[in-house]
Image (tube, rainbow, N blue to C red; front, side):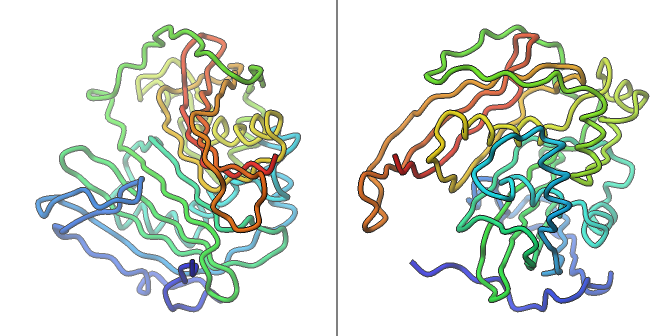
Length: 316
């Protein structure tokens, strides 16, 4: 199967504001986090496209990211969640926030997907393009599609981010409902506690300075009892759990839904199981299998914070 290619644009420089294409109009469809077109012609949207711009998996940035995650072992030199930091680059985030009218909004992450054709390499240069859409009805949410391409224009990875605009008067009930730890076919792995120092380190490494993670007044205004950790910090640690459970795994795609916020100071517990096994369709792969795994990230308070589904090849 031929790999998709990035749209023709030079990734050698950062675009000026006038080169970031935007428009606000009803759309015939939209990008869904699962990759399907599900909206009708009555969806009111704003949208912006940026890039490709030049990005780099700088070795020092990768090391800081790994350290902030507390990741002891992963599946490659660059964590699968590393490209999330590129969404916060000065060439991207201010344009998306300004053009989509999010300057005065509190935005929280609802889900995240990464899909890889091949892993990223340290100290390698890539092109990164972003398409963002804000849907104001029926619910106010923003969808971002990031595309990572190599120097030859081939798509290396894509990431889909779903954000929702947080409104205290219409927020989900943040009461921490007790949920039993689900059965796990793997040994439960515990990390943490995720203290304020690690939260600040992750904010710096990921370039994500959302005030819900650093400003108690903002957190209280959002209806929270205090500061919360980054959802991507919890999701990023899934890689370490998978590596401990199945070292010969090769992740193709991971999708995570964020269910409830996790207070700073919490411990995280990772449980998981294989939900589907299929013979590998890669020629010459021998005994390799295609697997679908489900991982649940729970807290020491007894509730599930993130549920992830992983498509991967196992070379065992």
